[in-house]
Image (tube, rainbow, N blue to C red; front, side):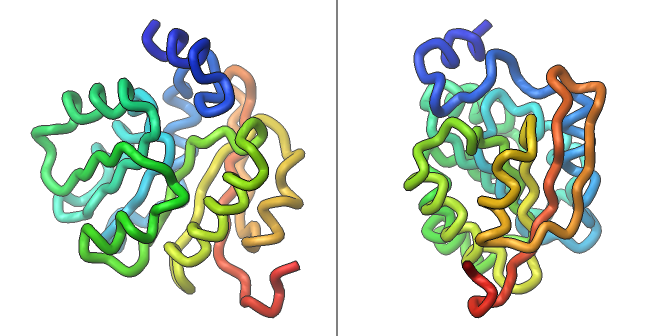
Length: 189
């Protein structure tokens, strides 16, 4: 119910009337190599649908940085995950991911998992987030996000190479999971 209330109050930043389902959460973490991941960032953690899967599958020493703009969701995330080691809950914007990584002692993230509603975010905010994400994942990291349609794929391809596309049919509505890596500066359109 809290998710629905926050959606009504902030429809442009919440992006859905209910949290993502378990099947989509499992599909979102499928591309992650948990054995080698040292730092994983999650954008738009919300009520923790993806976070729960990340916590279950990560090594205890893997640092998990949760970036959530909604104060109420941040409060819930802190309550839920306060006893877990190496979890940082940050009430802030994904636009500042590099600042948060630096504060936690990292230059790059191995994976950034995003639940952000890029189709409803203002264009400038989306562009700032993707620019910051490019820097944050460096040459080896991966950016994983989901969308309910592929209408934003060309937009993502201005910043990244889509190296994988997964489809989750069971989610309501069905969703696409895009797995992306950086492209060279000279390839940016």
